[in-house]
Figure 1 (cartoon, one colour):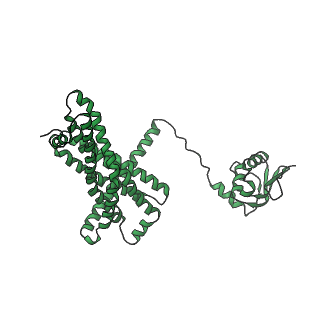
Figure 2: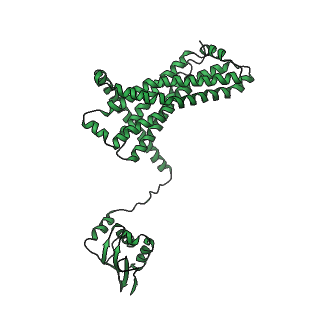
Figure 3: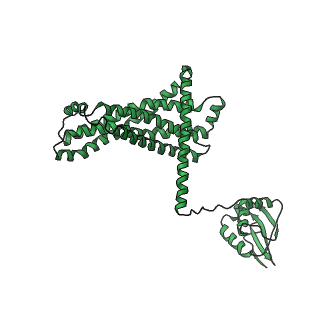
Length: 375
């Protein structure tokens, strides 16, 4: 007979009598926390091919049962004696499958499978956005016919939170973009004696592309993520369920005000970004190309057709609606857990910026030959 009795009789211990391994004492976290690996190794070595007797175990918790279960090789031994109050612990472990990492098979079929899953997820998102848009139109016309129920306060609150708070970062980004565009164009234009055309390059690029694009990206990352997180947090705290219980539409009170507010405030933010960008271009033109501010401002409306300004404003409206629409959709998709909240917030920002770039590319192709030269 061999035995392994530690410190005292109340600790987790064992002994071998003939072809039977007897376990005794307290098999709990408190007694075994510092020697788990040693105990598991000894049990697996001594208990191989033997009968197990657990009748002398005084106390057994989940950790002790898991350690013994792993010593058995995650299956019941052929001969086992155990107290009835301890048997449910092992039966529950028998029903629990161990977690194994999924082995991905590399190859053309695996790539096609992942590509197909990605396409299906995109189509599901587009279908969900389409359904939400229909719901938004329905709620808009319903509230429009009942001015007392129109979300005026929510719209004004969203405008205040989105507009003024975004001006500092948009001012900095717009100013720097104007500097970069002009500074990069100056040497080439100066070498051909075409300094004056910096006004056209800076004006068209800022008013037509960079102003709306930068404003949309900043708002998508700053306000769009906040919209998704706000609605998602209400899902986690069950506030959305409470609204529906009282007969209040979350789309009308949470998503629709954000769509209307961004449709109003985004064109104003685009104008502000344009002004900061042109201010930066004006300073560098005066510094690098000797084009004075008076001449720059006088020639700007002559060399840059007004169409570019209005196209940027229209883009601002479209981008504002798009950002609020997508962020509201992903906010409503959040499930009642924090992992879903972080995932949907990330997806909201990524999808918003992606769709902004796609729409900008489509509009660039459509209006490729419009507004580039003075009439």
